[in-house]
Length: 168
Image 1 (cartoon, rainbow, N blue to C red):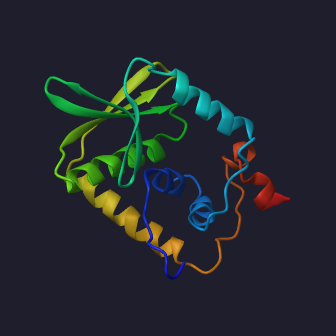
Image 2 (cartoon, rainbow, N blue to C red):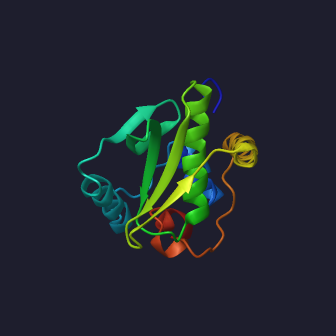
């Protein structure tokens, strides 16, 4: 990774809380199987869900799914199929709020779970800020490792777009 600027993105934060090996693979430009059914479903959900609202706003640190305002407050929303990876979703959104705050933009977060038809409010408080900063340090350390972590069977493996890479 020498000679290349390293940027942590919301996607890397998401995957860190699911499988650190995926973070290493992504950060070293080893892409998942783009034809994987779960990748296709994710793309479809992002295209079709909340179609009337602005989507995929890019800024340093990634892309947020929905950006809007409510009661004069900027609201950043992440759309997820379900709350199965709730911690990952929470930390990804917290990371976006953290990055926006560094740019001088105060925003509230909202996780939107399509299957459960439920929303969860996320506020970047002091404790969540510390969690994001600690995760960023661990992610950077992982990204600079010369080899990926060994694959470990976890509950996400069966639906992972890297499963052939890890288990073939």
